[in-house]
Structures are given as C-alpha cells and as structure tokens.
Amino acid sequence: MTFTIFTLGKASSICLGNFDGIHRAHQKILLACLDGAKRRNLVSLAFTFDPHPTKILNPKRAPLLLLLLRRSEKWLQKLGFDFILEQKFDRSFMKISAENFIKNVLKKNLHAKVIVIGPNFRFGFKAEGTAELLKKEKRF
Image 1 (tube, one colour):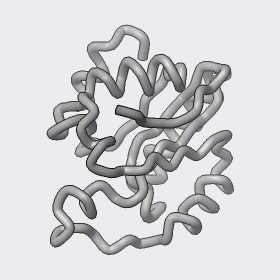
Image 2: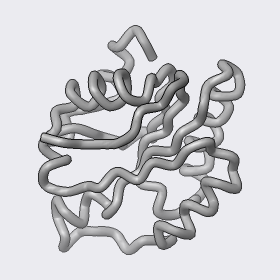
Image 3: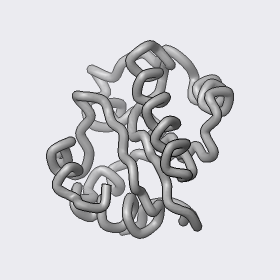
C-alpha cells in the first residue's frame, strides 16, 4: 500500500486537518502549530486531505467547502507555513492504520515533534487514531 508523500530533512511541527475554511477554530490550530515550530526551531507543515475525507466515506454527508483548496493554500502560505501537504484521500489511503500513519508518515517521513489537531480530529482506519493515541507517543 502506498501513501505519501515526501520526506522532510528537518524535524517538524505539523497540524493535521481539513482546512477547507480558515475560520477561528482553524486559525487557533494553525497558529498553535506555527508557534510550536517557532519556539522549537522546527519547520511548519499544514497536512490536509483532498478530497475532504467525508466525500469518500459518506458522500451524502460531505460538507460544502468554505474555500476551494487553492484558496485555502493561499491562506496557509500567508500565515507562514513552510510546507503544505495535500494528501490524496482515497480508498487505499483510508485503509492505513493509525499506528502505521504515526510510524511511517509522522515519524519516519515528516520527523514530527509537534502535532496539533482539533478536538474532533480522528485519523487512521475506521478513525481509530485520536489525540490520546498521539499523546502516548513520547516523541511528540
């Protein structure tokens, strides 16, 4: 199974989410990520998905996007992110376990030291990845 991506050469501060609109809640997450990068001398990375995962998982319930992906990218660039990663979200990617995502994407490829997510963010196969799972990792 292939997934992502590229490899960063330096440790990173990453925010994970569907930044389809840069509203106040998103701004709080994004600014916390940028602050973590600045305070720890890390590169900052906004990690988002295309299309929105709900469009694949439950198309009838997929939200209307507040911003098109390209406009969202421009906002992220203006905020000062070093990198913006748009992961293709498809049936293959959605089968990756949360542990595999942490091990191979966040740790191995992106050298994550800081992870910022919103309160409802879930990741990995069957949404098994949670903030609690990330907190168990001593590396973050």
